[in-house]
Length: 321
Image 1: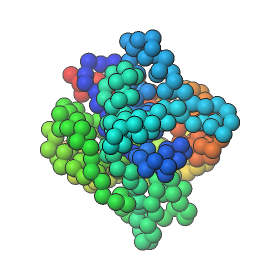
Image 2: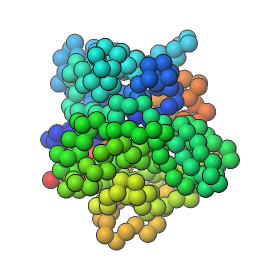
Image 3: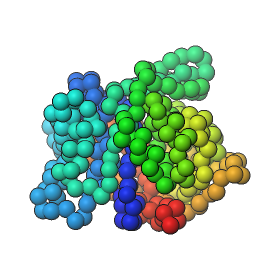
């Protein structure tokens, strides 16, 4: 998002809302709202540099994360979005985000895919059913996932479907395949919108496998899974060619993660290969540490290696011409 906003385009983000970890879990359980955390991150990425001094002050407030006490690691932005949703007569997260976006001055639009609070569930090959993103991720033993589905039916918000309909290019961001990407496609109306769209459909491939979710899967296998749930064929995949440092890779392998191999990517697809990852991980490590001790056991490793927004923006620029 932050890499693309520098180019002349109308940018809209349709955001997954099924995460049930951290502060989002408390908000979901207390207020019966979809999780606001991923939308908050997209909003922060779209902060306009031309904002007024008052808007910049509000942006800083929105981005504030408590550094001590019982609230250590919690984001003020999550609470703000929950409050704005509660202030809406219909208590819809989408309306709360729209209201906050106007005040914060964004270079784009952020839309939660649904206003209904839902959990992602997985059925494993042994028949076991697990509901909730973090229960799926941390399940033991790690029996292979056969399929994923929502605990209840949900409908995509009309503005999300309209954004897909109007788009000239659709970028599918990297993320947790079964718990972060695929849930978007399970919302009512989304498959039909994607099928009707004439936009080019590009997936930015993950760099690493995710333990318990995509063990031993190739990039090609990821593509097939995305197409199976989205009911559309992808036009292109962006593959990172930047080298992961040996020290960092050793750290990841302790958790069972490894660099994704390409595999047999369908010949009908074009492949863009580019160095897309951050050269240094110091800032990512500080960011994760600031979230608080409660997040570190699992999330510290999974967020140390990140795509570089500027490098990725340059790689995606070819689709905007």
